[in-house]
Length: 112
Length: 374
Image (tube, rainbow over all chains, first blue to last red):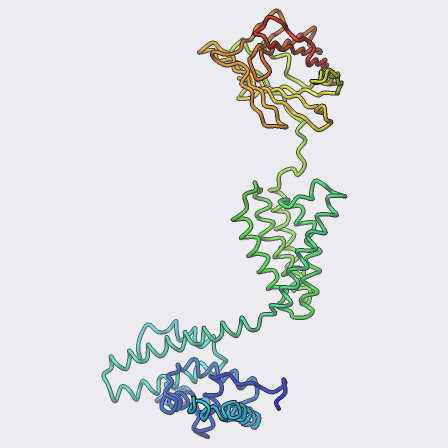
């Protein structure tokens, strides 16, 4: 059973966190957004991605580091994100809860 | 790069954490460069703008949601209720100790209550600093709403005080947790605004017995002099016979003054009614020299009944030396009011009523004996 102290994930946070996890060392704003759009079929603005990542970083679910500035980015650096151990635990808890709640529902729906 | 996007870029950079704005714009620039190779410059620029504005809208929305979630609504709501209870208590106490201020629409009441509001906001801010500011904002909104929807006659001083003193007192309560300089500045602002509100407040207690008697206009008709003896303040006693025949005596004060720039006389009698309640009757007397008629009307304040005693085609005024008789027809029958003026400091009023068209008169219905107040 979970406790009230556990970090809860919103839908947006859940999706973005999974995106960061999938991309590994290549997770930054543009790639995370593309991953969500391609895999999840959900269009997100860059702004929404960054605000969500910032919020998750303040909760300790992800960490970030700045890369090197490049000319093709107008001299701006990329900010790379990485899922923390706490972020992985939060993801597992959500998957467990969702899995437990969904268990048996497909069979039940099939019989009705 | 697409032009006319500077303001959106700057706003986005301010709303995002330091470094995130640059990273986001770098992502946009990177994707824009890729699109330039694949599509036309127009399409790429259109994409850039759309993404930039979409990002700005998303960041604004998410930041707004964060702000609303961060507000300590419960503490602020509790503080608001406490302020309401405190105001009721303060008005009750003031009605005993300082009745002139114990009015809901008194600016001075708000000023007197402000230290209590500062204290309430200070306590709220000990739980969450922003609670005091939310309290102040809520007080401001409620005051503005009440000022708009109220049907009462409110002074400009009250409007200013309700919009400034209460909310500012709440803000000051929150600022007490900060440094002394901030507190001193806020106190100074509160003091200035309070003085401004108080300066615009009308005298809270009006004494209707205080009056200036004015003077007759040189353009007023000479006929008006017939009632000039009424001008001034008079004290005396009255006697009235009740329907059951019993005679009641009572003290009475009479005040007469020139009005309408000295072209008419308004005089009023203040005294207790037979049942002991306060009673005021107001007379208006003017002579219309064009139509050569008197206009005399009497307003009985306890029941707000207006009696049109003399006007064109009804009633009359007869002057004999310094004595005047006003005759009028009303619900009681025909009424004759005699004003007897022995000297400048003394006049007597006697009322007679006839119920048979003037053949027989019922004397002594109401008599007044008044002398000039020293």
